[in-house]
Length: 386
Image (cartoon, rainbow, N blue to C red; front, side, top):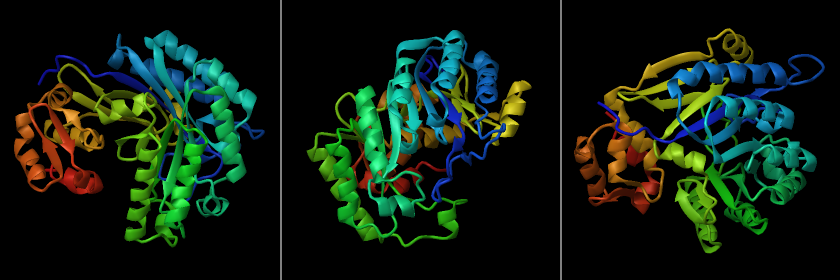
């Protein structure tokens, strides 16, 4: 196996602290309880660790251009503009970050203050992803969110003031939510002028409070009706449904996530961050130490990576399809070979099976999930599992 051309490269930066751990969240996030004394986040030490982590990763990405940067969490907007600026300055000195790179910061509405977000914009952040989840106070309370409906609207107003592009994260099929309430949330996002909307079905993930103590959720028929009405509303409003849960006005698609879904490369740094990198003869994955305190200690000692391994050749088709088939328009047939190093013929029998079951369609140029395949994506992906 040999790759003739390496995929685009993105940089993911994980900031693991949040104000409160939500009962549905299975991300590597930790409630901030004043580590470092005086209630302050350990910004200086953590940024030092991020920079050390990045320096240790350089041999794997030397000379490669970075097209997108994404600060995820946790709640990255808990970090001051000065801390974010110090990291970006170091990253720009160490890596060739494109002048037109998309640089996204995830933010919680409870952290919004106009001057703070003006400062983020001035230092180069050009996209926000705001965890609204709902505008309804009762549903926000049921989800354990620390903001209320008024704070959500205020956050959107501040984002609109300082950023041309921003995303609103919304969830549906919430505890005791009706289809009308789910649609009202999305309609409010549209009326507030969001260029991008992510609409996720609430799922009960293992190792979460909701999984241990399930709340009363809408049944499958009600959830399907919510999804159908949300998609119709956004289509009517001019949003392009380009990925399973992502809707964008023209030109506002998330370039960082598109790189994930196209099986591009991403260097993950920060506590618990995952990454995927293509070398000339193999594809590798890495994960950094998960707990923030241990991560900082190990990164500053020169050992930020907890695991690093090659992806088995037999696993590459499923890994590719798990991402690319989330795109409503699917993928160009040549991309499979470009990103996996394997001929498309290696999965011909599985493509035939998906086509026979009405889950995908293809020709010599493109492979694309059908509407049925998009509705039953897990069933489609199972075809590519060994």
